[in-house]
Each structure stands twice: as structure tokens, then as C-alpha cells.
Amino acid sequence: MNNSPELEEILNQGYRYAIVLTKNKDLAFDLVQDSYLKTLEVNAPLQLPYFIKVIKNKFLDAQRRKQVKKKWMEKSTVQLSVLQPNGVEPYLEKVINELPIKQREILILSVVEGFTAQEISDLMEIPRGTVLSILKRTKDKLRTQLNEQKT
Amino acid sequence: MDQLENRIKELYGRKKLSDQQLKQLLNQKVSSRPQKKTLQLTVFALAASLMLVFGYYFGIHPEIQKNRIIKAYAEEVAYNHLKESAPKIYTDQTSSLNEQLSKLNFEVTFDERLQRYGNLIGGKYCHIDDQIAAQLRIEDKDSNPLTCYQFKQQYNHQFDQSINTKGVTVHLWTKDEVVIAIAETSSRE
Image (tube, each protein chain N blue to C red):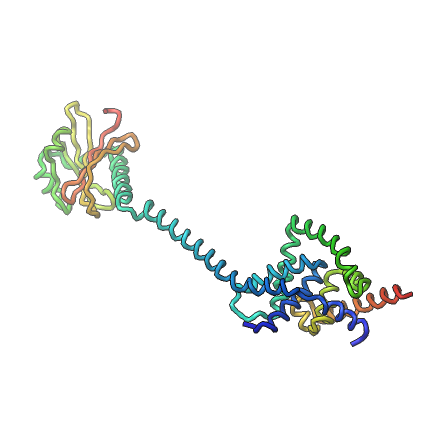
């Protein structure tokens, strides 16, 4: 089992990934909580790639359920008014939140969590080349939008 | 790392679980496993109990098993009785029957209880419960035919009862290891 600082870091990384998916802090925590419970069923030290996969699957399961999806949609409209005023970079966060989910995931896993293109490719089960091209397109799009905002 | 990446990293790097949330998650580790195991054990115990109850009452319980066997005897006897096959040996003497039905692994009897049903007319071999058996033809005082079956049972059950099946009343009882069954059409009663 991981020692406490390592485990806490993995939980935080999972939480950040959950925020990317849900765009809402409360939903992100719920998602991390459910996912962490799921990982406890496996009697092995918690590894980040596995944790990320569990979070993603839990998120997709929740989305498939119409009721939960509806709730999530309602809550996710709230998050814009909750998260934005407290954010360090409200515009940057807004722009990222408006990206398609796959672009958000790849961007954050690569830039924030330091996953390589190959690791993202394995995790998301898409070709490495696709990961790299999505990452490049996403960054270009962000740069353009941020530059437009400046002018 | 360019400026954009630094800004993204800084923005998301600040997003962390609160101490309260971390504590909540780490405490789950302690409580969740026993709960899950307890649930699994409870489900297993319930399933095992149900299987035992069903097994006991529908297969293992000796009395139920015995009744099932008696019912099977009665059904086979009734079926044979309805075929109304004629005896191959005509005699009113059990000694003669025993002599001619020499393959039987028991002695054919026509005791007082059987005599109350009528007179012995004859008999032949037949099979009940995959066992070689004797089929005796009896006629009551009104010349109505009755069929008596005698065979050595595979089990050590003792019983004496009547069963109605397929329009036939079958009286079955045991005498030592031998099952004796009398079949008569129910309309006569």
C-alpha cells in the first residue's frame, strides 16, 4: 500500500482529473470518492493510471444514467458561477472548460500531470499520433483565444 | 515549457482536495473493506441457507423421499393395471405360481389380507421400478378384475397407504422386504 504522502498525491491527481471531466468541484469529489472505494476492492497499491481509468469509467457510467446525467447537467451550470469568481485565471479556466472533453483530458494529463503521449495513448486507448495532434490543436486553440482576449 | 503550459499547470496545480476531504477519503479505506466483506458473507450465508432448505425439503428429507418413491410405485402399478394384460399362468395356488415364476428373488404370497380382495386367478412376470415383479390376477366376488403386484423393494421403507392415480386406486403396503400393491379401478368404489 502507498504511504500517506504518495497516496494523497494520487488522490489529488485523481481529483484534478475529475474536475476536468465534471467541471464541478463537488461532483469531482463525489467521483473521486466513488472511484477510490472501487479501487479498495483490489488488494494492491493504488497506481495513478489505474485510478484515472476507474474515475473515467465511473464518470461514463454516471453519464449513461439519464437521471444522473440530468443532475450533472444542472449542477454543471452552477459551477460556472461558483468556480469562475474564485479562480486564479477565470478566463483561462472558462476557455478550457469549453473545450471538448477529450481535448480537456489530454491537455490536463499531459501538461498538469506529466503523462507522456504514449501513456495517454495507453490510458485512453487511442493512437499516440492522435494524442499528439489533439494536444497540438488544443494548445493552438487556447493560444488563439487567449490572444484574442488580450486584444 | 511555454507560458501557456505554465499558466495551465499553475491553475490546475492549485486544485487540491481539502484536508477534510482527504481525511474522509482515507478513512473510507478502513471502513469500506469490512463492509464489503460482511455484505458478501451475508449474501453467501443466505444463499447457502436457501439451498439447504430447498435441498432438505425437495430431495434430502427422508419422509419426502419415501413419499415420492411410493407415488412412483403407485403410478407404475396403475399404468400396468390399465393395460389389462392377461395372466400367463392360470392357477389359484401360490405354490404353483412360485414354482413357475422361479426367477423371482422372493416368494409370492396370497395371505389373508389379499384373500379379502377376492380369489387368485393366475399370474405372470412383470417389472416395477426396474425390478422383476409378480403380477397376480384376482377376481372379487362380483368377478371384477383386480391386479396385485409384488416385488422386492430397493429401499428399506415400511408403509401402508392408498393412492388414487390415473383413475385407479392403488393400495400399497410392505411385508418384510416385499412391496405388495393392489390396483382396482376407482369407479368400483
